[in-house]
Length: 88
Image 1 (cartoon, one colour):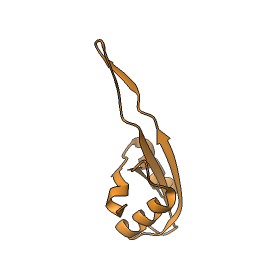
Image 2: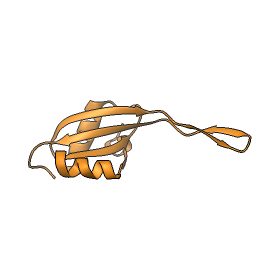
Image 3: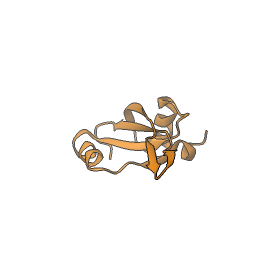
Image 4: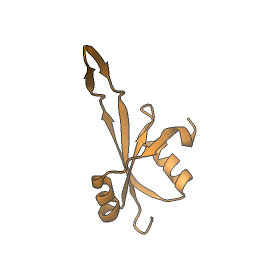
């Protein structure tokens, strides 16, 4: 996979902003097939930073209903990347 295909988008929430300020961590939505080594390499090359640790989590899509029709949101994966001290 190409680096820009692995990283889908940053996740910007109140919790991730607190993590960014206090623990120097950034959260991204990533390709479900990517592993933590590929994510680390992609973040280091795209953003030109040094990564200390990478944690990945699977998110299951919720079942949603619109009238009589049942649908399902897509499954997704996120990575919480901790940067080395001194990196921004």
